[in-house]
Image (cartoon, rainbow, N blue to C red; front, side):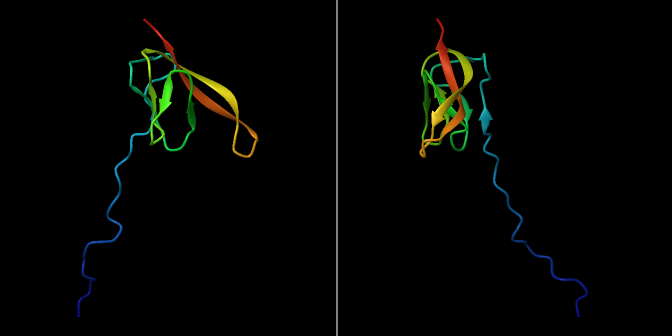
Length: 93
């Protein structure tokens, strides 16, 4: 009789790679055209002026300029006012 259980592979030996989410250009930073400002899941930050949202909720710049973060009140789908952070890009020459 064996005195130890046979050592094999386990079911729990895998993990996914991190997705590197978060703010990529801080408030006051310079963004080029098309540069990614925030990678996120869901809309924690919302697009403002000169910012667009990609299909995976990534926010990116439409013009070259300075990035600013502001808070703004929106109505959600039930009509309730909620405060959300918006990301804007102020054009620079």
